[in-house]
Amino acid sequence: MSGCKFQGKWLTEPQFKDWLKQDSNVNFAFCFRCNKIIDIKSMGKTALTSHGKSQKHVELLNVAKVGGQSNIGAFVSEKPVPS
Ligand SMILES: [Zn+2]
Image 1 (cartoon, rainbow, N blue to C red):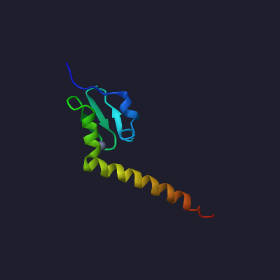
Image 2: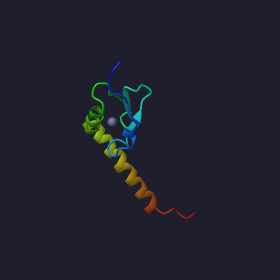
Image 3: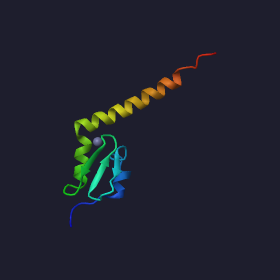
Image 4: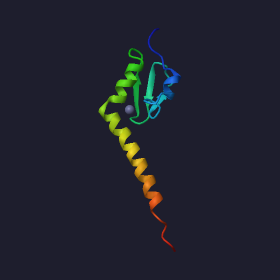
């Protein structure tokens, strides 16, 4: 049995760390933004890089970032109504 296996160090790389998770099967990785399993058996890290560039993934990642920031801003600037 050959093929690429998941490497724990990928989880710390800046281009992956915001969405990558290890799957229970070492030949797969998991994107928790897209809820998608990525087959890394044949392509290895290249499969992760290309998933990271896919339009759907980029959109989901941007929504998560923008949404998080604007929510924090709203909470900070909004003062509680005095009762
Ligand atoms: Zn993704």
